[in-house]
Length: 467
Ligand SMILES: *Cc1c(COP(=O)(O)O)cnc(C)c1O
Image 1 (tube, rainbow, N blue to C red):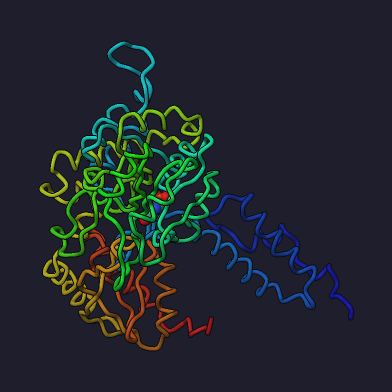
Image 2: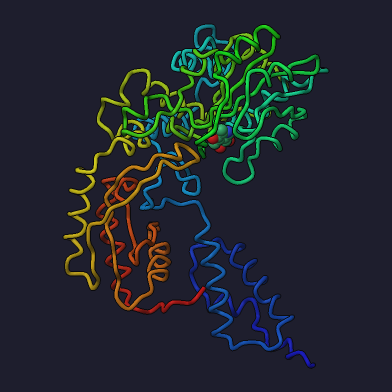
């Protein structure tokens, strides 16, 4: 079989000229063009130049859309890991902007004029918020757990006792047994998936035991013939055997979720510490609604030894994370999270609290603003989820704007909305494209109307691609 002449492949310079302005830096465009043209060398036939340009534009478009950018979340999933988990409120954004643009006293003691330690204020207040003797912060909850495991299994004792009912997987790639292994710990699994007794813990605790680990089943639940001892009982055993007792709590709600939104109760760090846990770790960007971070709270002597670990240095947070977390923690301590004007505080908590009535009023406004659009828009019901692998049993009854565009497949309509500026993300259910108002900020309502109108006005250009 004969190859087409390579001379049929257009020159890079010619393609660049034909592409014109692309919003991407020139070296980036050149690299994409070269890659696409190189792929033609092995093609059976060289397509016409217009087709080649089309493919290159698609490749550039795909690259451009992968830049981190704001999107409107109409999924109703509050802690959406794919959409960046917790958005920040006005106070946190103001702190970030102030700290980012100047020097600051990150490691400078303003009293003595000498070197200071990082995060002193944050650690003090975080401990207070968790009802703990001490607290500290690393990059994320996974890192916190690895730090803890490495520290307690660094000596001769390598075994970590954990119930088989807690050997869980969180999201993509976080599996407790693998985290243990990667930390150099030896897994000592006890009990069965649904039944673990105090006796199982007692039998397993021996000369090779380094610590006892409890992992909160944050993203699923078990029902039926299920039994495991409470932390108080395990804590007594741990004390008797002089073993550290640690809980990976995952979500880390600070306020009572059942009072906030009538959903199930999520254990708080303060509560598990009161029940006898020595050290607890949880995420900064799940139910706390702060930046990505791994928070560790508990016994002062353990927190201090963790901070002395050389590995702690590799996991430390940067100034922006510390600043955002500091403001978030203070918003909780001052009570502002539940009392103040909402836009200023913690959006995650606001979205949990938002009542159906206020969502309906906004949805009605959007629907009536779309009354003359060439498709049906109506009010619908949604089942908002908390997301982020938290509170799996809870759904928040919510209000949606339901769209039924004519002459365009729903999948293509959704794709078009994802390509708008800013991208608008919703979901398809019952033959409609749905936008859940719970996770859309009120200040975004006008943009939603504009984007949906524009997408509909585009006409039935994109037919269902079957992809
Ligand atoms: C989410 C979760 C983690 C991981 O937290 P990151 O902050 O995303 O690293 C660990 N353990 C549990 C129980 C979780 O729910």
